[in-house]
Length: 260
Image (cartoon, rainbow, N blue to C red; front, side, top):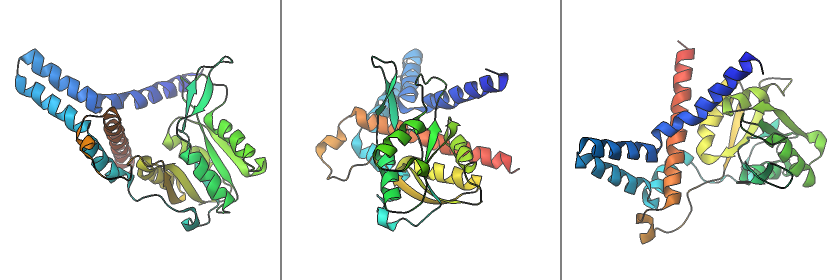
């Protein structure tokens, strides 16, 4: 691997690891540890109160709904485009007898892409070649999704996989290279909480973007007393929220400094 590749790998490690610094659990542990070290109970109490609120569904759902935006969009309401772009990040890697293998994490993005294609919303179905330095699988995620799409009847000639990309910004750059005429109009498919940041990055690249958010995390249901009890799922949602807000802040700063 050349020096440029090494630097790229280091940057993606930092990009993925640094958000841990502001995850709710880490912040709470720091506050509690400080209180114990300084023998100041108030800090420990504040940390426990924050832990309680960040791990309740009533708080996590309320905050998460703010970053998810509008509800599910009907396929029929989507406008025609030059391509349907499905971002990576819906599969995970597991061990198997033949070595590391892909397994579904959340297939909403994939099936939304298939539905849009079958509805004739665009002539091309584009998967991004999501791949990280620590992945041990032989193919990137986009190639795996292409195989699944072919099994569902999408002709190979109508499926494109971008070059490998390690984050959303690189995905936007990689997909841009696939179009001969610019600016192309795309239907962008990704998780609802991730859509505002993804849409912004693709638009900055030059695309005309129509968002098609999926994978909504806030459930449509009535509130119950259970929503006020600590729940690992709620804490996980709060953690995802903090990471997403950090990602948006990072690209806000990057944009600000690149235009000055």
